[in-house]
Image (cartoon, rainbow, N blue to C red):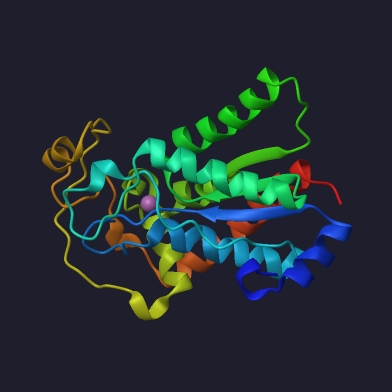
Length: 245
Ligand code: NI
């Protein structure tokens, strides 16, 4: 069940029997010469939709922009400042909790979002603590690529060639979601093991084509389907601990 294709009456009915919701969250940022700029949003969105089909959980519209300042040397990237992102997440949370949602599961596709999203959670909890008003809301952030099954598949499929940005795992999942958008590009054998960067200038000096130690050319639709199935199992396991029907 997707929020954007539902009516308010359907949401009202949903809230009579359950109060949980999944919010996919990603970014709009370069993913190397082969990877789609929407990779980090496409991945949590396709997974959230897969989970909704299995468990009929309400899925919010994907938050397509994230904290991507370090990718700003590459055309097409759109970033939020951390403060903008914290404000955005807080407003999304406060909107949903005001309607009666109590369990908000943020399904994330971009590591650069983690600090801002968890800070937004802390800001809301701090307001409850300082105002001596107990909170009935529970927030959880889970990055799809952190699941045990996904990590094991990445290890056996790609080993060190996985890298940490524009990875063959995330590209495979995005290609599985959108096979008509697959790019075939010759890539230089750049496999920097560096993972440090500050601003977008520093990032581009360290990672000239945008990849961080990742051999994106190993990505495929077929492996993407395996990532999809394993990630769904990882997320459901996590979700069932977060919200009991
Ligand atoms: Ni990514």
